[in-house]
Structures are given as structure tokens and as C-alpha cells.
Image (cartoon, rainbow, N blue to C red; front, top):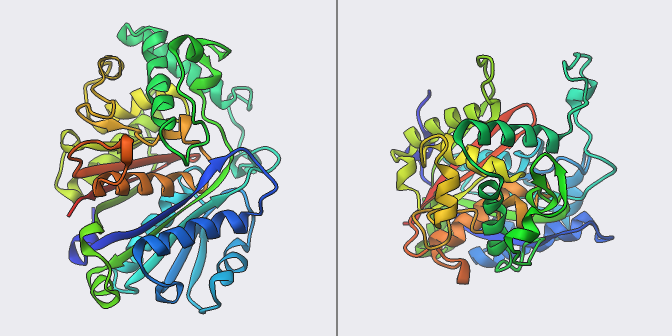
Length: 382
């Protein structure tokens, strides 16, 4: 592993903004994105002309989305690029913006995630000309239902313990005005409407539209622009990996998560047990259990009991998905990973209102994407 450039030249989140995640509407993506960017600029207390480079994370919009949108703020001529990395597109935009600042290329960079659902979710692997052994017959929710069945059988976990993840996250989402799902649910409601195996509709994330923006800056940028340093949250680590070769029966996404997290923890000089806040890729309820364990918060098979006990709730040992996670906040693809950074930043600033994890000082954001790829960021309160 190479040196951590984020330690050589510190990078801080200085501005965050969101457009609510919601079902598809007639609202143009330009409005979604600019709403988030303007909110982030106001949060940082800087002007658009102060931003020196921009990355737009998007998986669904098609080419050429950035300039037509961002030029509405002013045609400043800055470098722009679109970033596509499946569900990790927004996370990767943050990683690229942070790298720009850490390298000294710029002092202030924007990472924007924005998407609107199109007809289906087109993915290049299906057109790769490489035969898939299952022939496309296993859709995502069936894949994760099978993983849930395997997990429950291996660890003596019951469906209600897996559903408790969705119960917690819908409760968190009900407190989040930017979430797509803002209704607290009972366990019986969560367990209703099965889709595949033990997975139900409310244990699967909604895919809608929305936007999230993050502005990062160097120490020099903060000083030059007069940004409030007390609200700047430092990015201690940014790690990205793709899958390697694994033995038979190994869960690829969980194994990749464990590898990527280890790189991030090594960069940051912290351990999973130090975390106060964690946003994970919980597109399906079983994923939160698998990734919580892969990240090292607990031993295999223990996550379900921790959710039931409240240890992973707001106010518990570590608040997992206090935003509502993908299950309630929503999963508009491009914005999702960027939005996780927004939530962690607000938690570490102690600006999360009635979703606030008391005393939060260290947080992590985790996303996986088709491929498979994984992006992990570790952030710390100053």
C-alpha cells in the first residue's frame, strides 16, 4: 500500500448539501444537482468562483451531464469530470475530489452526486460477451435473499433479527427530512409483503432521484477563504479496491469490504471499535449485518443480536445508518455515497438534530458497487 497523501496534506469537508431523495418526478436533474451544490456552498460560506475542480458521480444520466448543470452557477472554466462506479459513483467522486486537494492540484474541490432513474438499470457487464453461469436468472433481491438464508442457517439467526435492521433504519429515516422513506414502521409491517425468501419490500431499498454535494478544502484553502475551521471535518482515509480472487463459498462483497476497510483503518490509524457513526451500503437488510461484521465491529454472527439490543442504534455503542441508510434514506445510485459523507459530516459536527449520536468524533462511510468495487472513507471531528 502506498503512502497516505491525506496525511501529507490534510483534506477537510467544509460544505455539505442535499436535495431530498424521492420517487422519480418531472424535475430536471439540473435542478436536483444545483439545489445540493448551492446548499453546500452556503454551508461552507464560499462562492462558486472559489471552487477549483468538480467531479459529478452519476450512473444513470449519460454523458455530458456536468457542464450544462454547473455552468448555471457561472462558466468559470474549471476542470470537470463525470465519475461512474455503479452504486459507488458518489463515493468515488468524493475520493477523486479529496485526491485533487491532497495532491496539491487544488485547494477547493466539489464532489456532486446526482441521478434520475431511467428505464431499468443498464449495466455494462451484461453486454461484456462473457457468459454468466447463472444466466441472469437471479435478480438482486433473490441473490440477497439467498445470502440471508445462508447467514441465518450458519449463525442461528431468525428472520425477525434480519428485519430488525429495517425497523431501525426506517425509524432513523422518519427523523430525516431528506429521506425518501420518512415513516416509522412496526416489525409486523416490516415482515409483510415478502418478495423473495425472507426478504420483504421494506427490507429492500427504493431507487429514486436526488442529489448530494460535498465541498473539500485544504488548510490553505480554509485560511484563504475564511472558512469556519471549527465546522471542518477531516478526511483521515480514502480507500478504494476491486474484488480479487476468493475461495469457493466466500461472500465477495463482504470479503472486499473487509479488505478495503483494513486499508482505510491503516491509513487513519484507527480501528472499527473506535467508530461512533457508520453509514453502510444496506441496499438489503442482510447487507448491514454482513458489512458490520466485515468492517470489524463484531464477530461473525453477532450483528443481529447487536441490532436487537440497540447497540447499533442512535444512542448505542455505534450509530449504524443514522440517516436511515439506503433502506429509508434511499438509493438514487449516483448521490448515495456522497450523501453518506453528508450524514457523517453532520454527525461529527453535532448538527444532526434528533438523529444525533452523542459525542460523535469518528465516522465511516462504506459503499460497494457492481463489479465489484468498494469505497471506504474515515472522517474525524477536529
